[in-house]
Image (cartoon, rainbow, N blue to C red):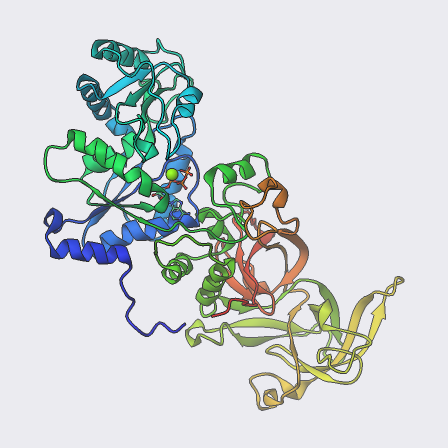
Length: 556
Ligand code: ATP
Ligand code: MG
């Protein structure tokens, strides 16, 4: 998929361009990203972020960060902080930081206004009863017996809902709209509920009556002056209600306009904050930033770069059609980004000792190797070579079939990467018959970089020198779930986890040049894949996370 042509506008960009051309809101463009701080952001949120911030960037507008924090039971500052960190990491800057909780007073005042206008009432029925009375899209709902309460009584009870006199769940404030409306959201939606048991992460116990999302969300957009309120398709049916609330109060022609695009779903993962929280709480993953999680912090720890995420989101685009994206496309994006960037090094996962018997004992030499053949600017580095090396156990076979071109005792030569040509002369086995040492002779005239280095043999194998190489722990990650769509199954999603999603390899040996590698540094381990240094690494104990294997199954 060569991107030679200019990228066409997505449908929301086209709307914004048209609005600017027509002078809508005097050409002003203001968007917002409105997370609820009740979990960490995931790759789906990244899609929304790239849209909200991207539009503002492209059309000289502003994108604010607004926390829709109307439910103290689930929200926390930990989430606020992580959300900010992730947005910055993706490379965006917000204009202002707003909180729906900053508008609690304004929202309250407007609710009082609605009550006074006879457009809202306090209902004392339980949430279950209210839900039962909703009706169905083709059948009108049942009106609450409290629907026509006198205004004074409503005002008094609404105040009590906020003073602590009303227990949780005992009363709600409902908008008095239309119990027969074909749009279910118009059937006297709940505007306020009582929460007394949890402090709000910003307002503490000051408020006990909390606005519902559907009331607060559209109003918050309105208070802030949002022009294009962009969200996902499930909010299409909420839009008329947001507009209705705003129309009750607005004092000019201005009203935010909501546009919806398709949510991102990816195979072999779940992207519901509720389910992700369960995985974290139940210890089924090692935290929100477990490298198997679809969270932004998880992907970051796994070794994904902001560029790879942007490229992925550009590729999938924005439409009005729901669908699920192949996880392979996300992996393709990181490979594509790291291929020219990551230094390619030798890492021996399953080491076996190789001794070059005709190489002088005690001698070592320094060889030069390229860091990345796909990127000349990547430069070179030095590798220590000596008499005793480690190679991959799988690169040797004693009784090899004809088409095995790596090391065997049959006299065939192989090249040690960036070094010399060798030939196997024998092996030593332990009492169980396992190979302990492989003996070889090298040809001193075949050093890479010299004329003899041009001599071609069928196969090149990787190696590290015994004394200069360092040990490492390698964490091989795979897809988190064993099935493509864990949410579609009748089984609990937690029973569908891939039992092989993490394999830890201890005793791996890597080039000494990586001794001071810092967390988040990316490497390609030759023949194995892309890896990055994990933040849990300590001096002398490097840990690498596999970002992606080398093989790209993604069909372009
Ligand atoms: P919840 O299920 O808890 O409501 P949410 O995933 O909808 O969680 P929000 O914090 O409400 O999370 O989302 C913030 C914004 O991100 C919203 O505008 C929402 O439309 C968008 N968003 C959430 N999930 C996705 C997704 N999978 N793809 C694209 N956008 C998403
Ligand atoms: Mg939501």
